[in-house]
Length: 269
View 1 (cartoon, rainbow, N blue to C red):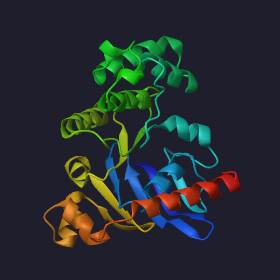
View 2 (view 1 turned 90 degrees about the horizontal axis):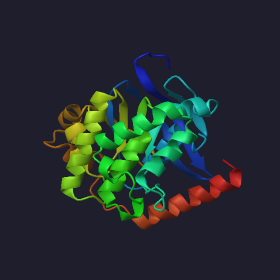
View 3 (view 1 turned 30 degrees about the horizontal axis):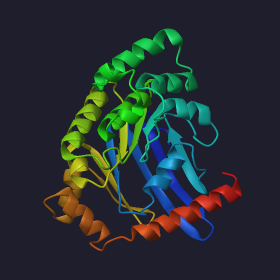
């Protein structure tokens, strides 16, 4: 795990909750500056993996390197290395857009003399500068997502994690969101690691893809390489050929998540 061009390195990573194995001995690397899609059906283990990468869960087994840091033993250094947009909204609706970013800046110890200029730069980048003093509760879903992107970039992270960043957004807003993300990849030279259930998004923007199912990585490579491997015309068809066509029980996935959270609390991790 010492390739200087790999900003994320995962080797034999496993996470068990009692008798349930959420992540089962997975290995993959992400190169600096890459746009990497991490795909899988409901309950595949994607969110659990992201939580381990971002210091929110402790692995049962395996190794992780994040910008050269171990997220288990070097949490502070690892956290300063990444920004994240969670699947669920995480803004404070009772604060203004600017106040949400200022609060984040204080948490990450962004120097005051730099914070104001950085906030202005990012809010203009996501086209929210004119709404900087408006309460977030007045924002649409797309505006909130754009603000979360700005917030995640405030402390100049090397890696940007996006867990279902376009979930619930209309097609026009989704397209604009990916334009922002691709532009920030170029502008900030930032590595993007994202999950999505919209497979066409991954085919359009990702340079490399890993597909996870039942806790294991079942395939990884470029979108074109995965299509060639499966003999399919689209990445979505390749995804379905690798993971099956059956409808996944979201309720069952929810039960699994509840069990995981209970086990996590019991173990104090």
